[in-house]
Length: 218
Length: 115
Image 1 (tube, rainbow over the protein chains, first blue to last red):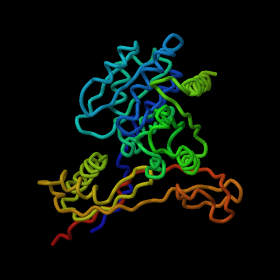
Image 2 (spheres, rainbow over the protein chains, first blue to last red; image 1 turned 180 degrees about the vertical axis):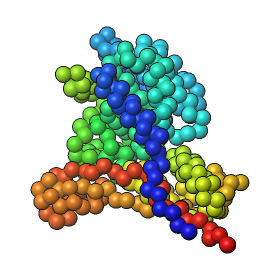
Image 3 (spheres, chains in turn cyan, purple; image 1 turned 30 degrees about the vertical axis):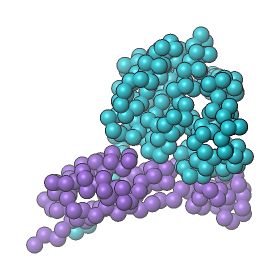
Image 4 (tube, rainbow over the protein chains, first blue to last red; image 1 turned 90 degrees about the horizontal axis):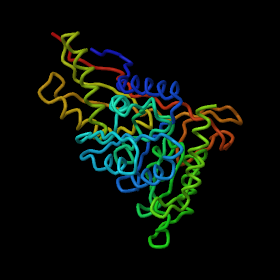
């Protein structure tokens, strides 16, 4: 006996994501979901961004890691509100976990929220958190084949950051190839070459943030 | 391994249907879009692990991959988009609108025939 169903499997995540999205829109909050491999520099990027912009904006961070609250403590140390989600084995964050974290950091008083997803280039991209946009970060030492190997992740990006650009002369990495592959899978997303360590290129990233914050509150 | 989460959700749904119908499920068909990135072998493995000791133990899970669809801005043709070959197969146009990716759907469950 066969039973036809047509039942949505991740409907719980989809419902929570839709509620998060409605919350961000009503509160005029820009919420960005950061996706990258482990070690691409997501936390370093946030530390520098917070230090440079905290005088102008109320910034909060939701941290996702399998274990430890190391990242949340790093964010708090530079003066932003942070809440750590320990996923205990799960390779991505879910919209329900984010919903809970939003209450804990009193999100309604913030202008800008970063969700630092679990370091992983595959799984997080399959889960909508209700975010306003996705920031995909690729770092130079990871190699120049990542956009071609993980096209789905890069295709879903609102903006792509190539981090650790200061290491370009020390490793084998074809910037031309990366830019060409990014243009193939996602011609609409702007690409910024940055170094969260030296500060190189960060102004262009801040410009993009400001532009999207303004778009959010006309 | 986000297949684990998907497998657990699929298992819960199938168990509910099995209970309602008083029948033993043997096979299920799932469909998903390209951004769900579900691997069939991993999904089967994750499902077997989750289903061990339940009425769903031993079930076969099949995945139907739904291609990403796009509409060409020039000739309006709707086509299956390959991310690494992003152009319209009819007019070769490179300007197109990507349609929403197919969600993860439990399409069908097959149950053992009852005597």
